[in-house]
Length: 243
Image 1: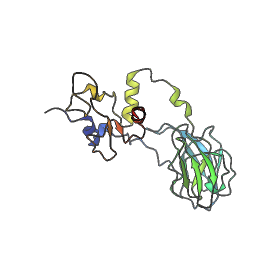
Image 2: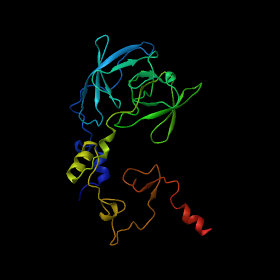
Image 3: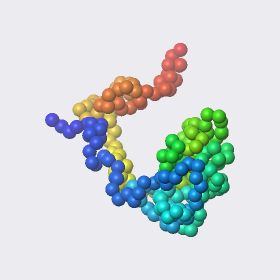
């Protein structure tokens, strides 16, 4: 009968293909304060959370509430953090986007006002406040994409710490396997053309080539959705030469 194809195995959602969710400390988000209130806190500890590449800063606010927030670059125990529309636009402070000047580097951005921070939370990442407008604030993300967000959405000034983590080489295949496994990824990856036809759409044949066009549509079912997914430029050069 044979094994299930890798696409089907992963689509089943088995435990071996899920990201680790145990050992978490607390939700990494801003505390539930009103968007118009001003608060201040101090970093009492920098901690590591399982499955997260950036350290978390344990912040104790003036009313005694503790909150875990992704630490910005340069944070250390004892640093003060201001939060609210009246805070200064300096490193580690949390302000609404309408109060942050153009060209400022920000991180841990709220997608919707009051959600606690959903965007730009991985180690070393940061976005830039591009412009302010009547409809909202335009943000430039690390991918180069621009997005307009509500002016009341909050963000932290600076970049997420831990940016040098990716510079360390894996050195051994076992380290790479544990890294991929923690993110629910398949590793090692076997080429589709090296597999049998029953295991992969590109498989089969004595010679290791697909033997047909590798482009598939965006609406292709999961068992066939491999190769170039709805490419924009693949093959255009050859068509131009024929003309």
